Length: 603
Ligand SMILES: Nc1ncnc2c1ncn2[C@@H]1O[C@H](COP(=O)(O)OP(=O)(O)OP(=O)(O)O)[C@@H](O)[C@H]1O
Ligand SMILES: [Mg+2]
Image (spheres, rainbow, N blue to C red):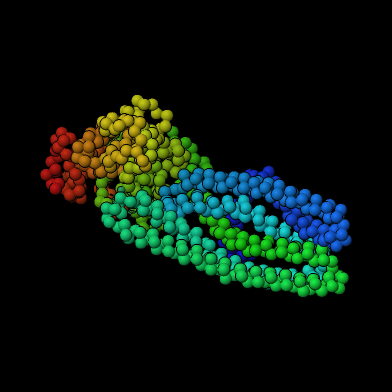
């Protein structure tokens, strides 16, 4: 039924989440059996009390009373034991489900494509793996048990009522449909609210997350008040939504209780009549009243839980949204490993638009470079330089055309074999909390001390690492020693060099360093570029890089505006000469190289 899905968006997802219980069959079945036994014991108790009154107390027979009380003790013990077992086993199973869900989510998060992260806020993902999983867990454990318990008690008690006195049962139960109606209304109101609460919570987390990662920018621009207000606004909204749910609860439940009390009234009235007319014993009336009381509790539980179901359903939905998110960039079924490459790089009629965007960021890019070449990419900001190099390791897939390495379309080979042969230094150098050594060896955790050192030296990071309190063992990141932007970048370069990639991509990786460091890194780059076993793509900021490159590509608004060597472009390209004059930075004098003739043009 289509309408049902519309009304209960999370129900399907919730069933899917509950299916995770299958891995915990023993615990789940154990909990179910224990539950049946608890309910049985619960239902038996009022009947025994009825017997104690009719056969023991009314007949003045201490022996019968004694036996019945003994029975009640047994029932109480059984109830205690099985309640414990049921709770314990259900909790174990639900913890297992939460564990599996978290694991599955994290595994997915590790594999999701770049384009997914372009669209989704980190805070929302954090919320899903923490709060949403917890909601599902709590429902899979105590929720399901309570719900099952409620249904067993409800139908068990109703059956016993009819067994004791069908007429009285009909009278007493007349209120049940009314209560059910109220509950349906309640659920209709509460379900969307719960969904909104979860969503708002996700947004609140996102604001927090963004603020924490951008705390320096916020301080620098004195935007604390603005950010506090932004958080406050979402927080207000959350409070408002929560209060609305409270309101719905308090608007509806008093009526439920009122109706339930009317049921009791009916019993005293009609039941009293039945007893007076000898159609019912006093013990039976007492049992009847207790059983009716037993019915109220499950009805309330079902009401409360149906709200929980919506909440858990909304959470399950959000969890599966991530688990089902398509992996846009993934191995083809018949992907083969990329053999060790010499690294001829070819862009063949490549155009690209970011998923979900209508605008073409790259169009009809054609070029080929031989193994061991250095390619310098120039262009104004936003022209598509980073986008172009990001297609090489398949961070995104081309929209049209093909990117080939040694003739292999990058889409035909396995991602791991492709990326393990590419070293990349991203525009923003991000390190992890851990030692300097761990950070440099990130792509090759089993690297020897010598390899780590060599990579650091090659990236001109050796000297400053030695000066750190504990050298390569110094902890950086979250709580460790802070590093400057240039130092971070050099560690990022060392990290890329350590895997000895056939294809090295440097995206703006020397833009954040001071003049002296810049000169040193430039030397490194020159050196790397001369090592002819590597193909290097460098998004260039410096004239010397450009001058020595085997191929210079000028990107302009997503197309190749000009292409060639330094000499060729100086001769033929007006644009190139313009860029040389206005955008590129001459190598600092400290580099010791002969200044380029264009240097005089730079400000
Ligand atoms: N993740 C993304 N989703 C959608 N559009 C994007 C994304 N990243 C970049 N763009 C757009 O693509 C265009 C090219 O961006 P790109 O990052 O490649 O520029 P760039 O040449 O590297 O610039 P810069 O020199 O500033 O680093 C820009 O107009 C940008 O708005
Ligand atoms: Mg860029």
